[in-house]
Length: 139
Length: 139
Length: 139
Length: 139
Image 1 (spheres, rainbow over the protein chains, first blue to last red):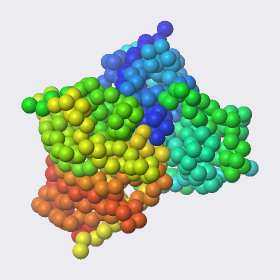
Image 2 (cartoon, rainbow over the protein chains, first blue to last red):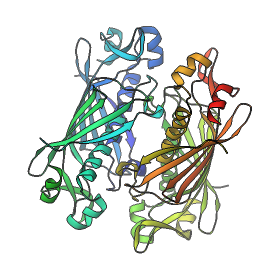
Image 3 (cartoon, rainbow over the protein chains, first blue to last red):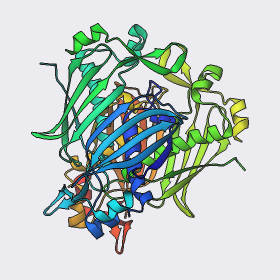
């Protein structure tokens, strides 16, 4: 079983749209917070440190697949269960299940990479091989 | 060929994260803007009008699949090409290709529904059959 | 002394801009969350209930004055101390002090109203007299 | 008369809250976009270039005063008129008037600085003297 870390948040008024439900891009904001929270809880240093020590500037997303099952509205308490069920050579799958108590609200599978800067092209990034010291912390 | 409408936006400083690239949830903000822009350009009235005339309060997303191909940063001009390549009984596929000139930045296929309120449950929504007058405007 | 309620949040990677500090509009997101949190903690029902019972649809802002004292970055834990130091006939002052431990990060004084809909103009809002039952809960 | 540059944007569904009006933190998002747009239109290079040439990493806000006059909702076209009416030794006042045709929606006066990094403290910033070459472009 992959290690699972929970990221909790509460839906606020301003997260909701005129239909009075969460405006869906906010789920992706929370998912990105939950992704970083997962690494922090696993003991991985912040990206501005890993940039210096191993050249990792973050974990940008390359693919994302989401299913939206139930709506949520303000006042709801959401729990994102986060894990990394699959490690590949230069990418990994990060999985999120967003629950409101026992109700599945949405779920998402992402493919992410550990990114470094391309030499000579400060705006461009490239996928690094999975840093084994990070992988060990997260399994 | 499905009708295609372009939604244009410019990446601003505040859309970018400490890695100096677009923080990815912003792509979903733009995609939702582009979705509504598509309907507006096709001649569909705003949702607060369709709520009264046909019970449609919006087009919530039920499934989303995205590929992130290249990064973007502030100053970039992005064009989202939007179309509806597939109509089903109670849902439709809305497609987005985000271009920076000739470069594909990201693309996304969503399944959305036309939502109405559930009677007696003002917070809950349900999928309505595709309104044919809307479909005709968008094909 | 006015009642004080604390709203806590953590700064995430995506809240920060390429200068690696909180993109300032995010402070106003948190302030609005903190404003509603204050009312919830004081026992005021959610706005979709007060809309039915007393015509209050929310507490829109009419004036806002902020001072930004220190920067914050991801990983920081922020505490917004919220109070209502002043009640007027149709408006009130809501005050926020955003602390990181003992450091003042920013502070804000807002003037807000309790808003109701204008009859015959569903998009327009008007200031209602301060609902005394809400004031009592918040003092 | 100070140089005035207009930043235009359209209010989208997702910018609005359950009261069906713009969620006010979004005004500050647009204001920050409008601030940078002002400098770009005046011919100031992007901050990642000025960081190298003159140590300027951006123009963080130190004080902000806003008045919200009318509400806006989705479909509205907003024009932010931006100018710098006052230059001080190490700060400047940036002014915004947000119009919908002839209607004033909100206005804001900010104090901002040109920020550089503090030596030895990469997270901390300090106010630089106003770069005269930038001031000349913006008057």
